[in-house]
Length: 143
Image (cartoon, rainbow, N blue to C red; front, side, top):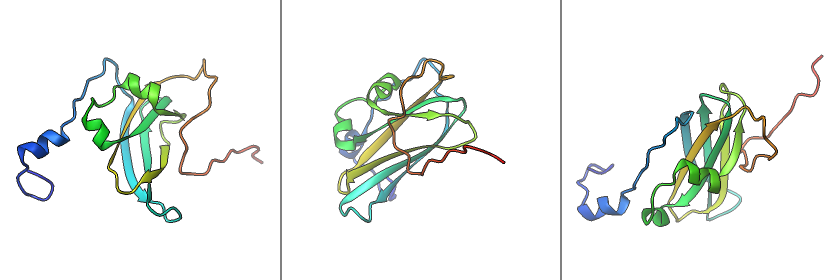
């Protein structure tokens, strides 16, 4: 049955089928929310905004994929997402880990896939590659 309550055809089910793989390691994501938002200053474009929580500090990767192209291949594995996806540091398990993909075609359908990996950042030399939809601020001095 489909979302609208009607029975799905065999062709519709086959067209939306995805092949998933399981990971041999625990992925420390406890929740994730993905919203599609119109870009008011950029007609014909949408953004995908990701908000996630993790159970351990470490790295968080996401990537957006065109749904049509994804139907012809597998859902990306954690290793593929770490290679292809944009990275964000999850520095606190009590704070959201945000992500932001913009300038996507409003008429296309997209899927966003994410993964995470625990890390203490001891060997870290890179900066985050995934943009946040929120401004960043740092406290320099407390009096």
